[in-house]
Length: 336
Length: 133
Image (cartoon, rainbow over all chains, first blue to last red; front, side, top):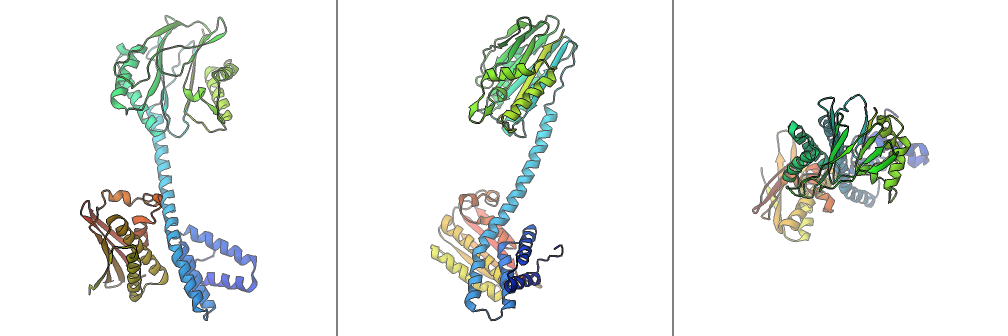
C-alpha cells in the first residue's frame, strides 16, 4: 500500500483487475489512489486523463465514440479542478489567518494583563474569558500602595477583533492619567473624551470604575452605562444591585458622571461583571438576573478566585461550552 | 516567427470561436488533451470577462518558440472600464463567490505565466502563456 504510485501503470493494473474480477480489493485500492491523489493536489481532470490512457492501453480497439465521450467528461471536470484548487488555497489562507489571530490574541493578553493586588485583608478573584479568540471585555487593577485599590471593568458593545482593539486604547489612556485624576468620575470623563474622539460612531464602551479606600473603608464608584454589579452586605446577609446612572462612553464628548460612595465593612463584597454573565443564553432563552445571583450565592463561601472560577464553569457548562459573549467576573471581599 | 491570430469578441457566440481557435493552435503546438482543455477553459474565462465587462475586445494567439520549449501565448485586450484594484480581483474567492466562474485566479492556475496591465477608463490587457510539458 505504501508503494502505491500515482502512475498510470498502477492505475491500469487496478482497472484491469477490477474489470476482470469485479473484486472489492481493487475498489479499495482505487480509494487509496484517490486519497493519495488528493494529498498530491492532483486535479480530477488528471485522474480522468489517467483513466483514458489506461483504458486505451487495455482496449486499443475502443470505439471512438467512447474516446470522445471521455474527452467530453474531462472537459467538464476542468472547472471542478479549479474550484478544488481554489478551495485548497482558501483553506491554507484560513489557517494562516487563524494563526495570525491567535498571535494577536496572545499579544492582547500581554498588553492588557493586570496583576491582582495582593493586599492584606482583601480577597480578590477575577476571571475574563473571550467568546472567540480576542477579548472585548477588560478589567484592570490599580494599586500603587497598600491604601487603595482601583478597579476598572469594561465591555465593548460587540466582540472580536474591533472590540479588542478598542480595549487596548482604553488601557493605554488609563495608564496616561495622572494621580490627580484617579477619581472614578474623572477617569470616566477623561476616557469618554478619548473614546468619543478616536472610536467609530456606533462603537460604544460601557465601563465601571471603582476606588476602594482601605483607610476610610469606603468604595467610591462611577459607571458609564455598565452592567450593574452587586454589593453583598454581610451584616444583613443581603445582596443589593449597585445602582448608578451614566451614559456609555463615546456618545457625547461633554458627558459627566456621578460619583457614588458606600461603606465597606467586614465580610462585605463587591461583585462586578459584564453582560456576558447576565445575558448568558440557554437555548433561545436569556437567563434571569436572579438566576445569576443564585449561582453566585452557591459559590460565594469559597475564596474569591475559586468562586469566580466556579461561577464561570457553571455558565460555561450551561451554555454547552460555547460562550455567546465575552465573560468577565470580579469579586472583591473585605476579610478583616 | 510571431504569427498572431485573433478573434474579436462581441457576442457570446464569439467565446466559442475563441475557444475553438485556441484549441486548434494548442493541438498544432503539441499540447496533450488535459492541457488543451485547460487552455480552452482559460480562453473561455478571458473571453467571457471581455463580453461581460468590456462589451467588446479581442483574443489573440501566438506560438512561442523558445530554445528549449514551445508554448502558446494568449492575449486578451479590451477598451473597457479597466480594473481598479487588480490585487482584489486576483484574490481567491473574490469573483467566484458571486458565481461568475473561475475568475482571473482560475486563469492564472490554468496557465503557466500570467500578466495583467489595466488602466481604469482605458482598458485591460492580459497575457497568459502555457508551455508544452
